[in-house]
Length: 481
Image (cartoon, rainbow, N blue to C red; front, side):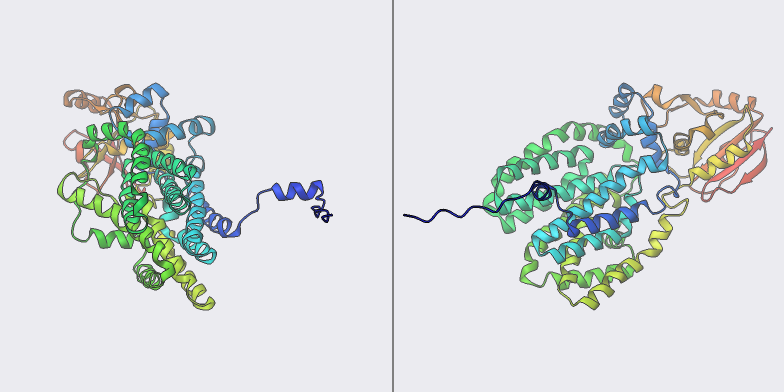
């Protein structure tokens, strides 16, 4: 007669609930919290600048008007505008409201970087990579911006993590999720799809038999972005302000990613240290192709075809810098590890502080709004002018960022509003109408960026300069008849 099978110990209801409750994983949680704290540090201090103003302009419109805009311009940001539309219409246009989604996206990306580091190397490497990512200046910079770059970066991390899971475990659900992440990456910013070239090199080097499955999955994932690509090509004149990159562009990009010369030297040493080991091989193939291939493709396209390169367009490569640095830190003893991590953070502080100044994102539109609020009078006119700009009326975007201050002014050069014309800044009136409007205005404000060239467009019109007000790097001048 066989012995009775042992019975499992009884589990109480509270213990069962505790077992089902998700555990907080410090490897993921600590980098996410540090990144979030860094991103919300002085979140509302920098003024909105032109690109963020474009977000506010787009999301101030009705959905039909927004869709009309996207068929004319800015289709590459359309998915982001649609995601932000209910947030802006529910909670308003304050800096914290508009920028907080980006801060949260960067925090999620930090958790993803840590998860990737743990998967590719070790929990220690994951934690350290996540912390390195958290203290890079450009991480908090684009975690503080009302644009799509933080979301694009987060989906780049997610896609890379899912690719590693899919290649390690070859389960259908990870391939399907990878395809979904690729789809989001492409619709949020088509330049994000350049990451797939890096993924292709990684697979050729490490998982060649899976290349066919990847091609099918990635190809299907790219399909939702095809309409965006078509519209973006039709709207390519929008990038007319860009010029071909110079020979220093690769080095400038490396410096931009690291945050300072000192940080660049230190992280380069740590990358070399980390990738020398056999355990760092998988990290090397994934991260170095991620770090090098997308910028190389974009720089090449900008040099030989259409100027399309700005460093922020490849901000999604920042995780690929942090990951091998984390591996390098994990391979040294505790005291040097702590010193190196602190040094990376400290060397980036001057950039961090500069980015958190009122003009840390660009032109200080808030300072202009403050001047107008204090000194404008009923019936005042305004002219917007940018020196040596592809779009001379670019400062008009300030009015979308702080509408209460600009709304009382009569925009003398405006023929049709941005919403009515389906454009970002509206259309410009003819010269005769402009002359008549200037002649009929008792006082005219000139808001000028890109330098100082007073009286600029108001020269020879019988006006005299009444006052020039300080507004950081923007010229705010008042003229009177």
